[in-house]
Image (cartoon, rainbow, N blue to C red):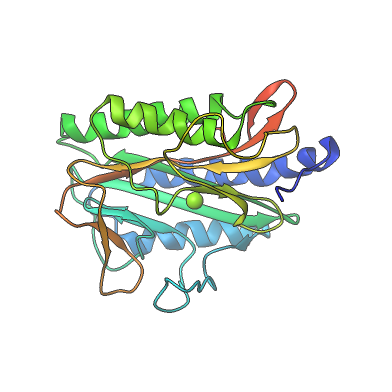
Length: 255
Ligand code: MG
């Protein structure tokens, strides 16, 4: 059962969406060569405290995590694709950094991610990887309209990825979001169109394509959290929290 929320409740979700967007914007500006992942996590933590928000990550301990996450931000660098556990690493020029961030503010959760190239030199292939993820996200969002089926979102994302020659990992993808970070449904980053539940106004989804240059396979780092590409190739990941409305998709985390 996919939760649906009234227009009044959707209005209540706007502040958390705007806050998540503002934190990711601040982190993007701060992510310069020489800055450590722990400093980025500390910056996000300061902003959480100032806003009176609650991290969705710090106590997070699902079956696939080695221990409670303990940080408020996912920092995935280069061959790290998802769930990058911040550690004592100073960013270098040309690193491909993905930042994933979710908090609860005022009783609602928003979840968003961005990928960027730190300083220079920027590898054009890395920029292309990011661009394709952004294009897939845009396509997935565009499919989040009443009357479409859930599989239409998955299909839109997968179609963009495959058109650019990328393989899709369907193990980790998007999800419903609302009172908590992970709600029904699960939204794989590829799938058959015209299948699954019918989308209706008031449904809220975190849509999050992620891609790697050379593979769709990942392994878990010995930190128990960070998911890395099996072939060492670089990864990108982008995400927005999106409401299905009768007027079309509403991106709560627009930056
Ligand atoms: Mg996220």
